[in-house]
Amino acid sequence: MAEALRIGIAGLGTVGASVARVLSEKAAELTRQCGREIVVTAVSARDKTRDRGVDLGGAKWFDDPTELARNADIDVFVELIGGDDGPARACVKAALEAGRHVVTANKALLARHGVSLAEIAEKKGVLLNYEAAVAGGIPVIKTMREAMAGNSVSRVFGILNGTCNYILTRMEAEGLSFDACLKDAQRLGYAEADPTFDIEGHDTAHKLAILTSLAFGCKISADDIYMEGISNISQADIRAAGELGYRIKLLGVAQATESGIEQRVHPTMVPTASVIAQVHGVTNAVAIETDILGELLLSGPGAGGNATASAVVGDIADIAKSRPGFQHGPVFGRPARELKPYKRARMRSHEGGYFIRLTVHDRVGVFAAVAKRMADNEISLESIVQHAAEPEAGTAKTVILVTHETTEAAVRKAVDGITKDGHLTDKPQVIRIERAG
Image: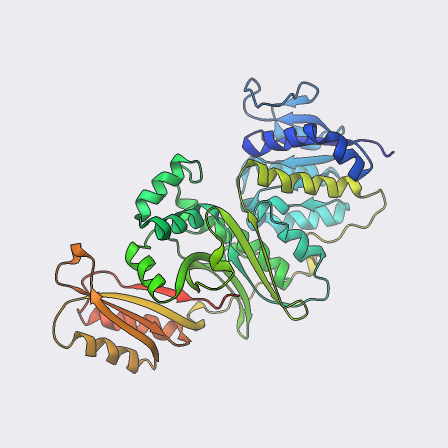
C-alpha cells in the first residue's frame, strides 16, 4: 500500500470540522477506495480551545495558516478560511508554490484570483481542486472538467444559491412576504445576519464566473456579470407568475452569443412545467447545454456542512488515488495560460421574453399610452392583464404585460418612457423569462 496522504486543514468552522470528522469516521472506507490512508496531520484555526466535535489531538497545531501551507510534513493543503484575499489567498499561494496540492471551497478566492493560482499549480505540477466552491455537494466541476471531453457548451445556467431559493420557495408556497421569509432563513441558519452577499446575487455571481471559465475556456471575469438580487420581488410578482404558468427563480446564466459571452444573475420566470422550476428549498441545480450531450441537469444539496464536506473529501480522495508522475489535467479544463480573454456580450442586446408589472393611475388613456410605448419600441405582446393593485395602492391599477421575444434595450426604453409619461404610482418591475428545460 502507498504511503499515507497527509492533510493540513486551515479553517475549522462548520465545513472544516465536518471534513475532519468525515475523514476520521470514514477512514477505513476511504483507505479501501483510495488504496492508501488519508490522515489529518496538521490544522490551523483562530481558536485552539473550541470544541469542534472531533478529536484533533494527533494533528499539529499552527496559529498561522501560511506557515501550515508551507509545512513539509503535509501533502495536501485544505483551505476553508474563506474570503477573496488576505490569509486565504496568501496561504493557498504559499502551498502551491511549495509544491503542495490544494483543495478549497472558496468561490470568492477563485472568482478573483483563480487564473493566477491555476498558473502556479500547473507550473508546479500539483492539483488545485475546488468542487465544493460551486453548488456544494453537486459534482458539477468534475463533470465539466473531466466528463464532457469533446462537448462544446452553448449555455450553462442554474440555481446556485440555496438561501435565495429557500426564500422564493416559501414566498410562493405560503404567501409570505420577502422580509418574513428572510427572517426565517436567518433564524434557521440559511442566511447570514447581513444577507446582502446572498440576496443581492454576489454569491451566485462568483459561482457563475467559475462555471463560465470552465464552459467557454475564458479567463474568469467576475466583475463583468450583470447582477440583480431578489429583494424587490413581491407577492404580487409571485402570484402573477403563477397565474401565467411561471415560477420565479434566481438564476445565474452564461451563454455564448455572436458578440461575446453573456453572464447575468437575476430573478427569472421559468415555466412551471420545466425541470428547474421543480427545484425547491435550499437545493441547487445546474443545467449545461452542449452540442453532443444535449442538456444535462445536475441537482442536489448546494450548501451546509455535510454537503460541502462531501465535495471537499471527494477532492482529497481524487488526490489520494493519483500517483507520482501522473500528469494532472489543467485547473479550468484548459491550460491557464491558454484561457482566452473574456469578451463581454452587451447585456442590453439580450433577447428573450419579459414580464413587466406596472402600477398605474386609474384614469382614462393610461392603458392606451402604455400600449403605444410598447408599439413604438416594436415590442409584441403575448398577453396583457389588468386588475386591481395591492390594497395599499388605493385606486391604482396593476397592468401586467408579457412580451414575445424582444431586446433588453427595447424593454428598458419602453418602460423608461412610461415612467416619464407620469402614469406610474410605483416603480416598474421587469423580470426576464428564461427558456428552461
